[in-house]
Structures are given as structure tokens and as C-alpha cells.
Image (cartoon, rainbow, N blue to C red):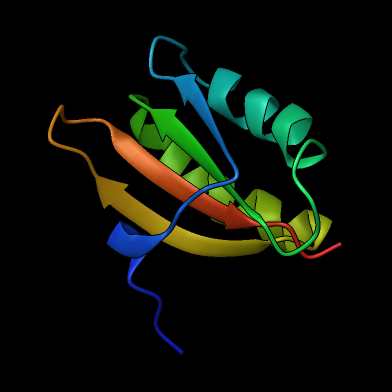
Length: 84
């Protein structure tokens, strides 16, 4: 099932654009616990490594990686659904 990421309303958005790796990942680790199961956490990241690291982290910890969009400002919008 494909999700249209542009229509997702995240329960929480974390702006980690000014952080280098592993900053955005650490923010995701902290942030995922602040949204309810079934809700979506959105991370903004300017670090290219985050796009590769986030799906691996989600798989490792049992959360659902929904995908990435490139925002108009050139940063990545990363979407994670809390599963547990």
C-alpha cells in the first residue's frame, strides 16, 4: 500500500535541519515516544545520511518508515509511523 506523503498530518514535527548526523536520528529516538501509537512523527533533516539511516533504525526498533519527501527548501521531510 502506497501512502501519499504530501497529505500526511504529522502529530509532531521535529526540525533537525541544522544538525549533522547522528542528530536527526537521536531526535527521532526521543520524539517517537511523544506521539501515540498509530500517529506519525515527521523529522526535517538537511543531512543526506539521515535518509539512509532512518529506514534502518525504524526496522531495528519496530516502527514503520513511511518515506521521505524533499521540501521546497531542499531539506528532507521524513515520516515515521509509531507502531508500538
